[in-house]
Amino acid sequence: MVLLPALSKETFKPSREARVKKSELVDVFITHKIWGIPIFIGFMWLMFYLTFSIGNYPKTWLEEFVSFVGNTISQNMSDGMLKDLLIQGIISGVGGVIIFLPNIMLLFLFISIMEDTGYMARAVFIMDKAMHKIGLHGKSFIPLLMGFGCNVPAILSTRIIESKRDRLITILINPFMSCSARLPVYILMISAFFASYQASILFSLYAIGISIAIISALLLRKTFFRESDVPFVMELPPYRLPTVRSLVKHMWQRSAQYLKKIGGIILLGAIIVWALGYFPRHADNDLAQESSYIGRIGKFIEPVMRPLGFDWKMSVSVVTGVAAKEIVVGTIGVLHHASAGDNEKSGSIIQKLQNDTYDSGPKKGEKVYSPLVAFSFMLFILIYFPCIAALAAIKKESGSWKWALFSIVYNTSLAWLVSFIVFQTVSLF
Image (tube, rainbow, N blue to C red; front, side, top):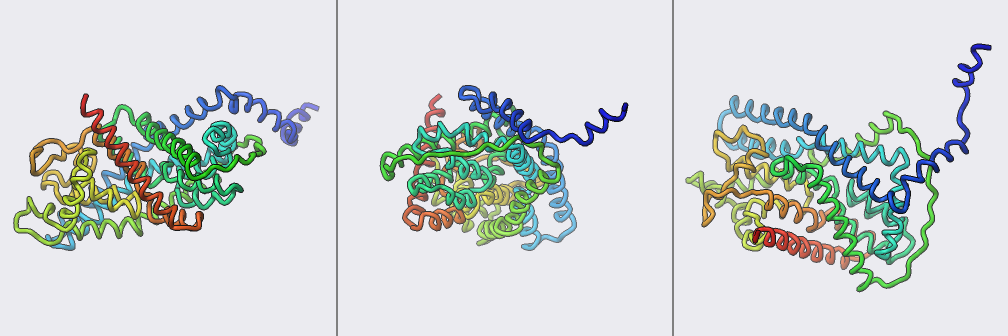
């Protein structure tokens, strides 16, 4: 008889009704009309905080490893174009992106936890009322939330939306969701210039992106799309305890896509940027980079971007980021390694940005970067030209290049305007 309680614990399984009641009890707080959104915002801020606080340790180890590999090749390989390609192009370009892999894996892990526990479905439910106020409904929130991972599958997933109006608006505002490709740029700039406010600055960028998406949706609704709303009904699944195997699987699948980009388009982009910066060769090393092909491109673009606080190197990285946003970091890594002095080449990309100064012009000797410049740059990366793959997805799902071209012009113009207002306004004070 003594064994009966123990045996009952081993064999008894709570009924579905009992699990549903527990879920409903938790939902009293999680989906509350007043507390639901603050709880959701709190979860998001905590996710960004842990992404930095935990991810900084393996990021530092990867930085040291990349620096070690670069120094080893530098010390054991004879000077020449191949050595410059390996160190200044491949290691600085690809290495500058790969060091942020731990942070990105952590972000994917936390998103997987939210999905597998059933909280993500609650987030859709919580945001339904807010989505109605901008002329959409809760189902549009699913592709927007997916956009934090990658805008391409998020845009493709808009097929679940029955209303053509809602589908097109969701497609056009999706690029304002900060995809994981932008995250390396954020982490680089925040680590270099916002060490004391990392989670808050990252959270603010995501919040600004969402705010711009909301404002854009309202404008689109009042101009191009005036159809009535479609009702939205969804069933909330019970809460579940995710398995370690499931979380690791989801995290790795998403991280593997990031690694494939590093080994493909980012590697190719780094090599192209290095080649454009390496040729034509110049007798005066101090002028070699500015007189190179990429230097000429940067100097040509710089007058347009100077009101935002950008120098020619930032301007060029914005252009290369059109192919994929991770290439922005690769470009910055290549350009700053190639222009650094011998005593600076072993330093991290973060240290190089902190010490970067103007080589010529009225600002010669002054620091290029500041917290304001870094924030203006991140805002531009957040808002401007969607990547080529996202544009192809917009064309495919909208059925016309018209909306893809609209996204190019609207997003880039808005990015310039927002960065200009922020940089010039704060500069006055």
